[in-house]
Image 1 (cartoon, rainbow, N blue to C red):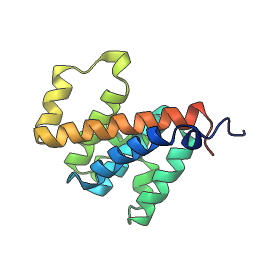
Image 2 (cartoon, rainbow, N blue to C red; image 1 turned 60 degrees about the vertical axis):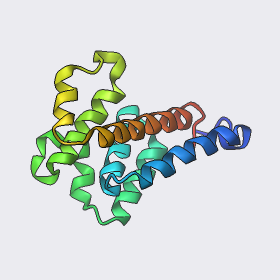
Image 3 (cartoon, helix red, strand yellow; image 1 turned 90 degrees about the horizontal axis):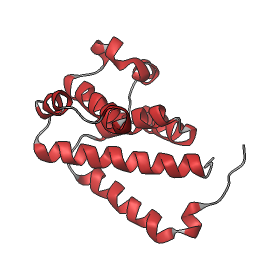
Length: 144
């Protein structure tokens, strides 16, 4: 499959703006591995091969074990591999990414709120939204 267009060349200001959001998330105080797990899970849900490859490699470089990477799609069935905040972040990421299917229920919000401060929850949601935007660009224009 070949790429369609290079969106970064055609809309550099837009891509730069997304990069600014990415930079914000990298400095917001959320643990880098937690954010990368969320990025990878969102990309798995969206089926973005480019981003799955990128974030898997990033996590591997940060020392995340292969077992954890392999079981991320079924994280609920491997609770021993993921701590409480990771499980909460992954659940929130799945809910927010699939917002058009079921909305975001009070129980989902309350569960996330027990694990994250309000600011952390906002930052986590920004990270999820950012990755959904990047996935849509990469998938639509077949980034390789």
